[in-house]
Length: 249
Image (tube, rainbow, N blue to C red; front, side):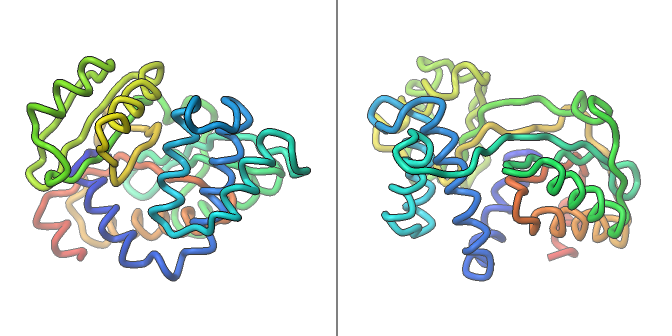
């Protein structure tokens, strides 16, 4: 999904935030726990945890929830053990779909993803069938008003960013996975808070879809997958013309 599409997705998501608050808090809590488990509970020395906490604050997640999630990750509080899994599949017109899952029950999440795919016009594929159509990158989406392009380039390129795109109302910064924490730290040091910051699957092969009904089928499948409790993110490589995007609302 391009930065432009990502920006549109962010704006749509904000409009539906209240309805999905419970799901959002669950995803954020798992992310915080995993970040604390892998890098420690001090956000001052754990850029990934700091980024997760910033997301939680932006979503108005209660501080007590954040603290509990951190303590579960560091072992100070008992909690379930989460694991991250990836599912690959296809939607209408052969659109590739990647589903990121964080779960304490792999069998349950696999069953739910498979069932949702089957009921909504998609089908689950084998490992590696779709992933090659995507690149795994660190992705930061930053509002244009938060900084200027020259400053952003100086800050992020020195930290290891590979590309900075000016999309008019926002910037998209991309980096290798190994440089994600360094770029996140560099932005934080300069007081620049991205509206989105994640390790994303970005399509390197796009599937053009010109038919409105087909596009709606794919988007409906993506929405249904995203509603599943264990699903962290859903990525697809459907390419739509601007006119069709506007027609779909």
